[in-house]
Length: 203
Image (spheres, rainbow, N blue to C red):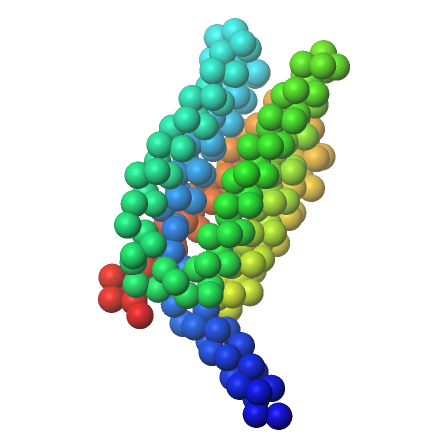
């Protein structure tokens, strides 16, 4: 019985630790939202001919966005593991969740690009916004559960709703404008809020 009580106390301590330590990594979400949101905005502008540019430039835009974000991740991660609260259960869970999202997005875009090339159907890439926002919803759900932050639950629900909305707009150039707005609102803005909640004297 004592061992069971000790295990329960340990799990309770982990949960309490996750709730008390502010979530870190908001700057990386700001980077992702700003960079990929802007890439989506450029995609909409080119497809809707607001920008008079050949559609072939879009591949360059997305590759450049990916490289820029990787550089930002490398810069922003330096020293983050040594910050107060970085070792909390909440931050460990959030890091792993968003790492999964990042790799998931990379694999999804790669798979859809290969499928588009193989089938000569460029429209397959239009599935990506819905899939990515669904992944965002999952990651935000983990963050909300670990931190008990009610506002993050709304961000998670909005991400899932955005995924469905993107499916309804699929095939329309306006979908990319909507996707840009979703990335700004569901990644960049929450990232900014998390950054403001990162006191330097966190436990």
